[in-house]
Image (cartoon, rainbow, N blue to C red; front, side, top):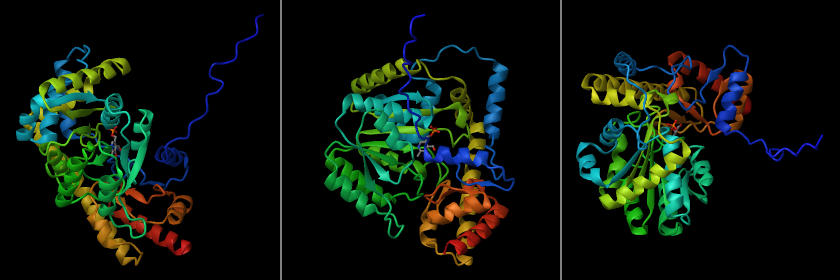
Length: 408
Ligand SMILES: Cc1ncc(COP(=O)(O)O)c(C=O)c1O
């Protein structure tokens, strides 16, 4: 018998999981009945279930009744989804005026849009460094590194005070970042901190982008879960209207509660229709060689909801209800923390927006919550407000007071 050739996979090394993914796996393996998951990044009810929105259910019923055949989509994806998403992101007036200067693609969620954006930028400006906020969503740096970029950080939160460090961010982008650098921005509901720049600060940032020729990657994953659909897109519209080279990575996962369908869109603002065509063709080449064409179902559902006036109104109401729920839980939590005399900065917590509370709970207390009470949140202290209801807030506060007293 000839000697068996050595395995080509012998050098494969197990890769560490993302900290969040690893924590969720630990939660699933925890046998305690009363365990509580506040680590999730999805809008879940207090039983940990992702809701199926009524508007989505209706749209699915209608599509099932029509029984559409499942041909391949064009590489750019569902045109109706793209038209509706453009309106959502830019508003009808700016969207229409930019129509011929945009390269647009349906993408595999916000993550897929970011990866496509990173691959496009790597082909066009490979030497530009990519700046992300410290802290940021755990996947940002990995995605841009996987595409070949050097990733750097700019300050976002002052670690000593826990306050937003807007001046530090501006200083780094204006004085340290080379001309033409790429900057990943959270358009609204910054993950994990919940701190968003004010409209005046966005204006000042836009000045820095124009002065330094920076390229913006707007990551918008929570539109409508902060102050409202238009308000949450304000920063993006400002950048586009001011002519800053902008890519938009748009996730529809949270806003339609359709995480597993992987629907998102990617937009690139170009200077003229020819440039937009060229950029579009570069994106299509990347789609073709990765997965050929994007999936049909989730995109068709979302397009149906957004095109049908009744379904759209129902969706807006449900989304607004989700936003109200997290706002109410934030207020309850902040009041409770203060009443319990825990050392948290009320003003900071109240200034935050979106799904998460960046609580400032120290890592050793987070560890005690997990080991002693079965309450899971990441060591950054970010907790998912959607996973709480009034009894959940009470339970969390009692557990926190106990864990903090022991840890102190
Ligand atoms: C800031 C941010 N961007 C992008 C995403 C990814 O979205 P998707 O699930 O659509 O890939 C997330 C998801 O948690 C996020 O928080």
